[in-house]
Length: 307
Image 1 (cartoon, rainbow, N blue to C red):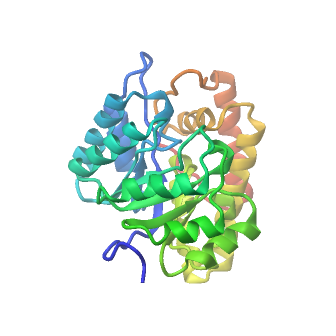
Image 2: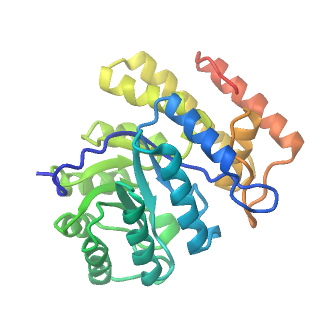
């Protein structure tokens, strides 16, 4: 039985970008417009203040204001997961308690960042967070954290109270599969890297936590639906769009989240700007990105909708 009882998270969750204004403040009107747009495009939930949301650039109080603004606007329309990872244990616990009080459905948490914890320390950390009572989506992202959650550790974590889901952003498909089989039936697995989606969905993962959905939510949702419908042709078209957008990101010379917001700007999507040290594309780069995205959609035989 899946840990956590009545938690039934599934589908495409957007790793929600946080729109910022020129002065660095949160741009609430754009945040609300982005939320409405993504829901209209079929998104089933949001992860708020994750990496794509530039949580690392925000103070604790700013993140709390973001949680409040998102919950106030979303209400109960879709599932809400709060990104509550922080550099200190105390702040992670406080953010998790606060998100629970605001009414979020769960939290997403990385292992302790930077300090390179041992498996015993990671286990104790998640046990303490789980004791707060808010359902947890564990986030395995070794490229950003510096430590990987091994299949054996994932199996141990799956036995903790309120650990209910697992977001996988590792790139070693052999280990990814081993982790899935070590926890199948106990955790709800979500894909964290969209180009690898088929590797986990074909094994039984229930959803995708998607960064690129801020740019192309319709295509990520279409991909998920095509997979479950067994529509190989539609699946291939959506996969090509997703893959090519990631190739464009890698070739852009921009940091990941600056690319996401620059691509949103190119398509007229409400995303605001990044906080420093990230730097948005200039006008010429934005025009080049728009031209490249238009070509990607055309070559994939997928219609492009701009706002």
